[in-house]
Length: 88
Image (tube, rainbow, N blue to C red; front, side):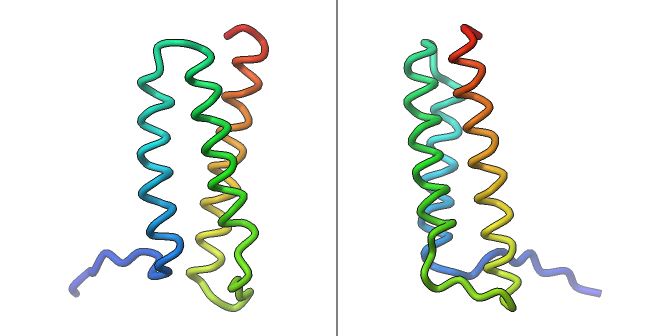
């Protein structure tokens, strides 16, 4: 059996996923709390853009995966902001 690695085929998701990967690396590499918070806020903005997609189709697996990814990304970034606000 041949396994092909797929992915979400939506062009909008693929563009935003690249941005998310870059922002995630920047959050992880941030030396200051302020910089970490700023990048986490940017991540939330990108996730919200994906969650607000006007082309969302409930029956589409790509859309369901995109929504799950975006929700997880938003929650993770929100946790980072909460940590930062607590002085972490």
